[in-house]
Length: 110
Image 1 (cartoon, rainbow, N blue to C red):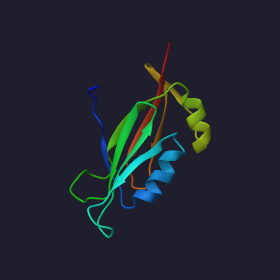
Image 2: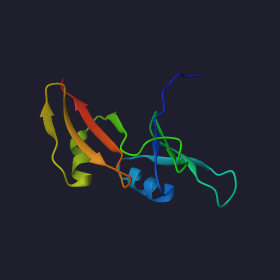
Image 3: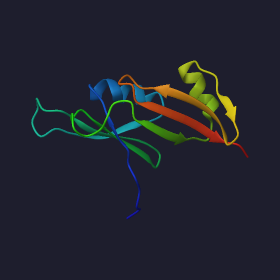
Image 4: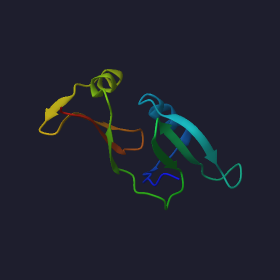
């Protein structure tokens, strides 16, 4: 087993969030609901990187910041129509998902 940390992000609508995260290259792995009308808990993955998206009110605070290190931030920036900026450690962009969670996406400088 590989040890890892998986951020949990609060979302209002898991299906909407999964569609938005697909633009970042994430793919839904599974969805769990205790009953059909209860909140969803979903895993999305981009290669080895995983996020949990939760409709459960107590699981996380909207507006959370997650840093995502990628090979090509410029490709991600193009998908979202923004321009990457160079900071001392990386080229970066910052995005907000439909629920206000922030994703800082960067490619380290070589």
